[in-house]
Length: 220
Image (cartoon, rainbow, N blue to C red; front, side):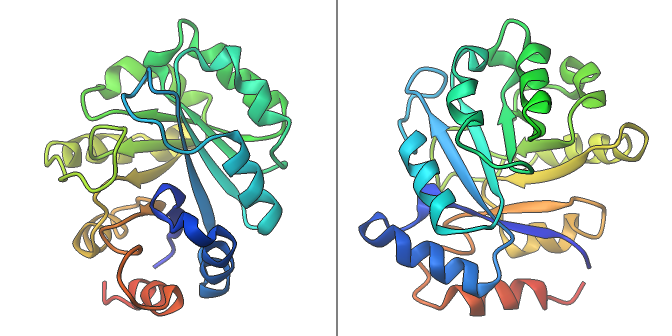
């Protein structure tokens, strides 16, 4: 079963971030998920530009940058100039008057363009943008905080997106309350990647490599 695993770094131990990055990389993580929050689009403050730069210096693995900020077009250059070709940037379409403008900036910079869709955002409202992005990050919880409960109706949204992905050429990534049973159910259906946080990866008092191996070795 071919799927990607990315670590939600807002859940990492910031007492020793370098150790966390090294152990995740050695354990076989595919990329690092960076949640940038401005305290306005969502009520929380999480990671920032300097966190992103630090993780980028510590690892050659791709960065998966999730911008939970208002009007990303106004600030996106700060992130683009500190990323590498092939890193991903997601924006929330509701946060921008003209989301296609921000997406075009990502494309022009050589990054992978993505959109993140909240539980309350319908597929119909972002339909046209599905043709210009490479990744769709489906939020299975409301954005802003780790450790929330899965919202069951999101599964139907993923089913709808799965019916479109081949024709429109985008990947589907799961973000929020990602448990083993969700990977077992949705990876075979075609979900391409999963963001791992406190549900499966962090705070388990086990080596990251063992956890990641167990996930990849699950019987599908």
